[in-house]
Length: 209
Image (cartoon, rainbow, N blue to C red; front, side, top):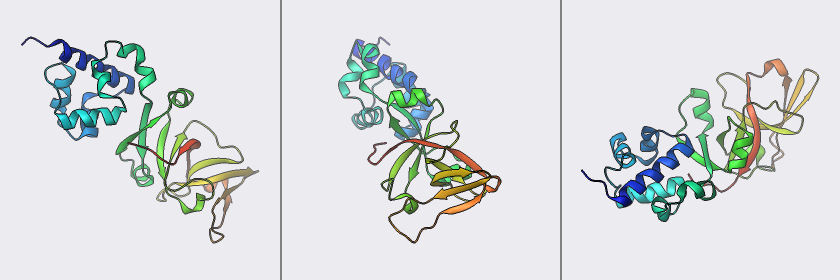
């Protein structure tokens, strides 16, 4: 079957977005709620998505419909979309479940933090510093320094929590930055912490998935 020029262009630019996002056809299909074969056919220039799927595609990658029919998309791609990272809930991290969603992040932030991931923060203990709900971007390769905001799991079956981290000798203070005086700081020995999942490098109150 002969492919139409605009169908080939659409497929080419879709593949650019997939490559840029380091996504497979099947991963995109899950995000859009369509079958794997649908995305594969779009990427092979066999068919166009439906009107609704095309709109969902644009919203997911945060590009305009015109992008898919732009002959210079490979030149402008870095200007029209952010990078994306996995977005977890604290429950997903404890259960080691696959991230249910992705969220955008500035390219320069991702370049500085290669293994960056994001976590939903709705913690009243941090409402004096982080607006609830927010998305916090976590670098798992950073060691927390005094004053940094860390994502900490105190016990293996506890949900991870956000706290301001301060260490003195073998003692760690996990400070609540709350508007309420009822939430107390947590003081314990460093070897009593099950895991430090990373350090917050950026947070965002408003987000679009």
